Image 1 (tube, rainbow, N blue to C red):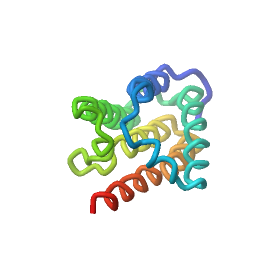
Image 2: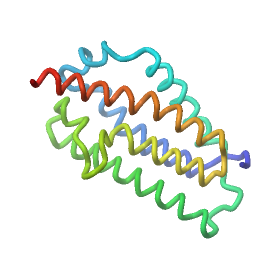
Image 3: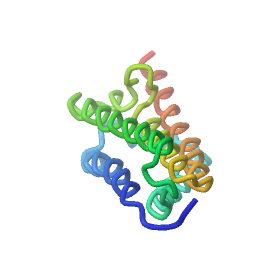
Image 4: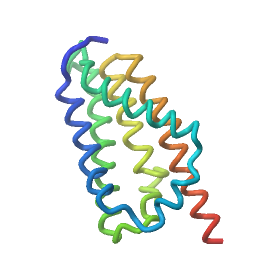
Length: 159
């Protein structure tokens, strides 16, 4: 674990924030109703994890740089972020329907929640930072938990 400025972390945050900003400008119909029932504990985990992941992504650098085998962690994390972008593209092409936010991407459940969490977890491994890994775990508990709750609520409404 080494402090510094991580341009790689900034790139991951840009990949994370750009589609989220676009989504925030035109949220799908029904999202406010679903989000009104979010578990407050999960929401606290999500918010803490969001701040912690954003900070740790930028302030930690990998002491090994791009040396093998550490670079493999970064490559896999980057591939997960590319899949995240693919999931967003699929959502935006769907006409921005609420249920499309939670549709699996192949075998990956709730990809818009699980992919960035997994990517930031692996980014923390690449940084060799237990703090960054813990931040991603906290984010995952909240963010994935909330999205699974939304999915359950939508499935119950369709019955």
